[in-house]
Image 1 (spheres, rainbow, N blue to C red):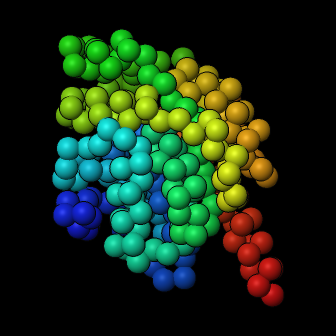
Image 2: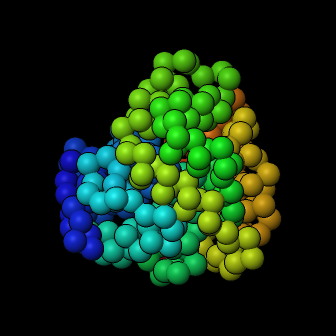
Length: 265
Protein backbone atom coordinates (compact mmCIF):
# COMPACT_ATOMS: atom_id res chain seq x y z
CA UNK A 1 0.00 0.00 0.00
CA UNK A 2 1.21 3.57 -0.69
CA UNK A 3 2.52 5.67 2.20
CA UNK A 4 2.28 9.45 2.71
CA UNK A 5 3.73 11.57 5.50
CA UNK A 6 1.02 13.29 7.56
CA UNK A 7 2.05 15.38 10.58
CA UNK A 8 5.34 13.49 10.75
CA UNK A 9 3.69 10.06 10.63
CA UNK A 10 3.74 7.56 7.79
CA UNK A 11 0.09 7.02 6.84
CA UNK A 12 -0.94 3.98 4.82
CA UNK A 13 -3.69 4.13 2.23
CA UNK A 14 -5.13 2.19 -0.71
CA UNK A 15 -5.99 3.69 -4.09
CA UNK A 16 -6.76 0.80 -6.40
CA UNK A 17 -4.54 -1.06 -8.79
CA UNK A 18 -4.05 1.88 -11.18
CA UNK A 19 -3.66 4.56 -8.51
CA UNK A 20 -5.40 7.93 -8.70
CA UNK A 21 -6.56 8.53 -12.26
CA UNK A 22 -7.09 12.00 -13.70
CA UNK A 23 -10.68 12.99 -14.47
CA UNK A 24 -12.31 10.68 -11.94
CA UNK A 25 -14.16 11.65 -8.77
CA UNK A 26 -12.22 10.95 -5.57
CA UNK A 27 -14.07 9.01 -2.87
CA UNK A 28 -12.35 8.79 0.50
CA UNK A 29 -13.45 5.95 2.78
CA UNK A 30 -12.82 6.38 6.54
CA UNK A 31 -13.06 3.35 8.79
CA UNK A 32 -14.49 3.05 12.28
CA UNK A 33 -12.98 2.19 15.66
CA UNK A 34 -10.30 -0.48 15.42
CA UNK A 35 -10.71 -0.66 11.65
CA UNK A 36 -8.43 -0.40 8.65
CA UNK A 37 -8.48 -0.97 4.91
CA UNK A 38 -10.19 -4.34 5.55
CA UNK A 39 -13.32 -2.46 6.64
CA UNK A 40 -13.92 -1.42 3.03
CA UNK A 41 -12.82 -4.63 1.31
CA UNK A 42 -16.26 -5.02 -0.33
CA UNK A 43 -16.01 -1.55 -1.88
CA UNK A 44 -12.57 -1.76 -3.50
CA UNK A 45 -13.30 -3.60 -6.74
CA UNK A 46 -16.66 -1.94 -7.26
CA UNK A 47 -15.60 1.69 -6.94
CA UNK A 48 -12.28 1.49 -8.76
CA UNK A 49 -14.19 0.78 -11.99
CA UNK A 50 -15.52 4.34 -12.24
CA UNK A 51 -14.02 6.43 -9.43
CA UNK A 52 -10.83 7.06 -7.51
CA UNK A 53 -11.55 5.18 -4.28
CA UNK A 54 -9.10 5.96 -1.49
CA UNK A 55 -9.08 4.03 1.79
CA UNK A 56 -7.06 5.71 4.52
CA UNK A 57 -5.79 3.89 7.59
CA UNK A 58 -5.95 6.34 10.47
CA UNK A 59 -2.87 6.83 12.69
CA UNK A 60 -2.16 3.72 14.74
CA UNK A 61 -4.34 1.50 12.52
CA UNK A 62 -3.31 -1.07 9.95
CA UNK A 63 0.09 -0.16 8.57
CA UNK A 64 -0.07 3.51 9.61
CA UNK A 65 2.28 4.87 12.23
CA UNK A 66 1.14 6.51 15.44
CA UNK A 67 -0.68 5.72 18.65
CA UNK A 68 -4.15 6.76 17.56
CA UNK A 69 -6.13 9.60 19.08
CA UNK A 70 -8.69 10.11 21.84
CA UNK A 71 -10.60 12.95 20.18
CA UNK A 72 -12.58 12.88 16.94
CA UNK A 73 -11.38 16.39 16.14
CA UNK A 74 -7.77 15.19 16.11
CA UNK A 75 -8.58 12.40 13.68
CA UNK A 76 -10.40 14.96 11.52
CA UNK A 77 -7.26 17.09 11.44
CA UNK A 78 -5.22 14.10 10.25
CA UNK A 79 -7.72 13.43 7.44
CA UNK A 80 -7.65 17.09 6.39
CA UNK A 81 -3.85 17.03 6.10
CA UNK A 82 -4.02 13.67 4.34
CA UNK A 83 -6.35 15.08 1.66
CA UNK A 84 -4.02 18.02 1.12
CA UNK A 85 -0.99 15.73 0.94
CA UNK A 86 -2.62 13.84 -1.92
CA UNK A 87 -3.65 17.07 -3.63
CA UNK A 88 -7.36 16.32 -3.26
CA UNK A 89 -9.10 19.66 -3.02
CA UNK A 90 -12.64 18.33 -3.53
CA UNK A 91 -13.64 14.80 -2.60
CA UNK A 92 -16.58 12.71 -1.52
CA UNK A 93 -16.22 11.42 2.04
CA UNK A 94 -17.69 8.11 3.23
CA UNK A 95 -17.37 7.41 6.96
CA UNK A 96 -18.45 4.38 9.00
CA UNK A 97 -19.26 4.68 12.72
CA UNK A 98 -16.29 6.60 14.20
CA UNK A 99 -15.38 7.45 10.61
CA UNK A 100 -18.85 8.98 10.26
CA UNK A 101 -18.13 11.18 13.27
CA UNK A 102 -14.90 12.29 11.56
CA UNK A 103 -16.80 13.10 8.37
CA UNK A 104 -19.41 15.13 10.27
CA UNK A 105 -16.64 17.09 11.95
CA UNK A 106 -14.96 17.85 8.62
CA UNK A 107 -18.30 18.77 7.03
CA UNK A 108 -18.61 21.50 9.66
CA UNK A 109 -14.97 22.64 9.77
CA UNK A 110 -13.88 22.27 6.12
CA UNK A 111 -16.96 22.06 3.87
CA UNK A 112 -15.04 23.64 0.99
CA UNK A 113 -12.94 20.48 0.65
CA UNK A 114 -15.97 18.22 0.28
CA UNK A 115 -18.41 17.53 -2.57
CA UNK A 116 -20.74 15.29 -0.58
CA UNK A 117 -20.78 13.02 2.45
CA UNK A 118 -22.03 9.52 3.20
CA UNK A 119 -22.65 8.76 6.88
CA UNK A 120 -22.72 5.01 7.55
CA UNK A 121 -23.90 3.41 10.79
CA UNK A 122 -23.15 6.53 12.80
CA UNK A 123 -24.78 9.28 14.82
CA UNK A 124 -24.43 12.86 16.02
CA UNK A 125 -23.47 11.39 19.39
CA UNK A 126 -21.78 8.03 19.96
CA UNK A 127 -21.89 7.15 23.66
CA UNK A 128 -20.01 3.97 24.56
CA UNK A 129 -20.97 1.57 27.34
CA UNK A 130 -18.52 1.73 30.28
CA UNK A 131 -18.29 -2.08 30.13
CA UNK A 132 -16.69 -1.77 26.69
CA UNK A 133 -14.17 0.88 27.72
CA UNK A 134 -13.27 -0.98 30.91
CA UNK A 135 -13.32 -4.33 29.14
CA UNK A 136 -10.76 -3.27 26.53
CA UNK A 137 -8.31 -2.55 29.34
CA UNK A 138 -9.18 -5.55 31.53
CA UNK A 139 -9.92 -8.30 28.97
CA UNK A 140 -9.04 -7.13 25.48
CA UNK A 141 -9.67 -10.32 23.52
CA UNK A 142 -12.79 -11.27 25.44
CA UNK A 143 -14.29 -7.81 25.00
CA UNK A 144 -13.52 -7.76 21.27
CA UNK A 145 -15.24 -11.12 20.87
CA UNK A 146 -18.32 -9.98 22.80
CA UNK A 147 -18.57 -6.72 20.84
CA UNK A 148 -18.45 -8.48 17.51
CA UNK A 149 -21.48 -10.57 18.44
CA UNK A 150 -23.47 -7.31 18.28
CA UNK A 151 -21.75 -5.85 15.23
CA UNK A 152 -23.47 -8.02 12.64
CA UNK A 153 -27.01 -9.04 11.78
CA UNK A 154 -28.17 -12.47 12.88
CA UNK A 155 -28.38 -13.41 9.20
CA UNK A 156 -24.65 -13.05 8.61
CA UNK A 157 -22.22 -15.92 8.16
CA UNK A 158 -20.19 -16.91 11.26
CA UNK A 159 -17.13 -16.71 9.01
CA UNK A 160 -17.62 -12.95 8.58
CA UNK A 161 -17.90 -12.54 12.36
CA UNK A 162 -14.66 -14.45 12.92
CA UNK A 163 -12.93 -12.34 10.28
CA UNK A 164 -14.16 -9.19 12.01
CA UNK A 165 -12.85 -10.41 15.37
CA UNK A 166 -9.46 -11.28 13.87
CA UNK A 167 -9.14 -7.86 12.24
CA UNK A 168 -10.08 -5.95 15.42
CA UNK A 169 -7.64 -8.02 17.48
CA UNK A 170 -4.86 -6.74 15.23
CA UNK A 171 -5.51 -3.28 16.62
CA UNK A 172 -3.45 -2.51 19.71
CA UNK A 173 -5.53 -2.30 22.92
CA UNK A 174 -4.44 1.28 23.60
CA UNK A 175 -5.45 2.40 20.11
CA UNK A 176 -8.84 0.67 20.31
CA UNK A 177 -9.45 2.16 23.75
CA UNK A 178 -8.61 5.62 22.40
CA UNK A 179 -11.01 5.13 19.49
CA UNK A 180 -13.92 4.26 21.74
CA UNK A 181 -13.04 7.04 24.15
CA UNK A 182 -13.07 9.48 21.21
CA UNK A 183 -16.51 8.16 20.23
CA UNK A 184 -17.78 8.48 23.79
CA UNK A 185 -16.66 12.11 23.92
CA UNK A 186 -18.13 12.95 20.51
CA UNK A 187 -21.29 15.08 20.52
CA UNK A 188 -22.57 17.24 17.66
CA UNK A 189 -26.26 17.01 18.61
CA UNK A 190 -26.59 20.81 18.71
CA UNK A 191 -24.46 21.51 15.65
CA UNK A 192 -25.40 18.84 13.15
CA UNK A 193 -28.09 20.99 11.50
CA UNK A 194 -25.35 23.37 10.34
CA UNK A 195 -24.11 20.83 7.81
CA UNK A 196 -24.94 22.19 4.36
CA UNK A 197 -23.50 19.53 2.07
CA UNK A 198 -25.23 16.86 -0.02
CA UNK A 199 -25.66 14.00 2.45
CA UNK A 200 -26.54 10.34 2.19
CA UNK A 201 -27.25 8.55 5.49
CA UNK A 202 -27.05 4.75 5.50
CA UNK A 203 -27.79 2.21 8.20
CA UNK A 204 -28.52 -1.49 8.56
CA UNK A 205 -32.01 -2.15 9.89
CA UNK A 206 -30.53 -4.55 12.48
CA UNK A 207 -27.74 -2.21 13.66
CA UNK A 208 -27.46 -2.57 17.44
CA UNK A 209 -24.45 -0.28 17.94
CA UNK A 210 -25.77 2.72 16.01
CA UNK A 211 -29.52 2.01 15.78
CA UNK A 212 -31.79 3.34 13.05
CA UNK A 213 -32.94 6.15 15.37
CA UNK A 214 -29.40 7.60 15.17
CA UNK A 215 -29.68 7.83 11.39
CA UNK A 216 -33.19 9.22 11.66
CA UNK A 217 -31.93 12.01 13.91
CA UNK A 218 -29.24 12.90 11.36
CA UNK A 219 -31.78 12.83 8.55
CA UNK A 220 -34.17 15.10 10.45
CA UNK A 221 -31.44 17.64 11.21
CA UNK A 222 -29.42 17.75 7.99
CA UNK A 223 -31.44 19.69 5.45
CA UNK A 224 -31.93 17.92 2.12
CA UNK A 225 -30.31 14.70 3.30
CA UNK A 226 -31.33 11.29 2.00
CA UNK A 227 -31.65 8.23 4.22
CA UNK A 228 -31.39 4.57 3.20
CA UNK A 229 -32.06 1.76 5.68
CA UNK A 230 -30.77 -1.52 4.26
CA UNK A 231 -32.63 -4.71 5.22
CA UNK A 232 -31.04 -7.75 6.91
CA UNK A 233 -27.86 -5.87 7.79
CA UNK A 234 -26.25 -4.78 11.03
CA UNK A 235 -23.51 -2.30 11.94
CA UNK A 236 -21.15 -3.47 9.17
CA UNK A 237 -23.77 -2.72 6.55
CA UNK A 238 -21.13 -2.03 3.88
CA UNK A 239 -20.06 -5.67 4.18
CA UNK A 240 -23.35 -7.37 4.99
CA UNK A 241 -25.32 -5.73 2.16
CA UNK A 242 -22.38 -4.69 0.01
CA UNK A 243 -24.06 -4.80 -3.41
CA UNK A 244 -27.00 -2.61 -2.43
CA UNK A 245 -24.74 -0.37 -0.37
CA UNK A 246 -22.37 0.19 -3.28
CA UNK A 247 -25.19 0.90 -5.69
CA UNK A 248 -26.78 3.49 -3.38
CA UNK A 249 -23.48 5.30 -2.85
CA UNK A 250 -22.69 5.28 -6.59
CA UNK A 251 -26.14 6.68 -7.43
CA UNK A 252 -25.71 9.43 -4.82
CA UNK A 253 -22.32 10.48 -6.18
CA UNK A 254 -23.45 10.39 -9.81
CA UNK A 255 -26.50 12.55 -9.08
CA UNK A 256 -24.36 15.21 -7.41
CA UNK A 257 -21.79 15.19 -10.21
CA UNK A 258 -24.51 15.39 -12.85
CA UNK A 259 -26.21 18.22 -10.99
CA UNK A 260 -23.02 20.25 -10.71
CA UNK A 261 -22.37 19.85 -14.42
CA UNK A 262 -25.87 21.12 -15.25
CA UNK A 263 -25.34 24.13 -12.98
CA UNK A 264 -22.08 25.01 -14.73
CA UNK A 265 -23.79 24.88 -18.11
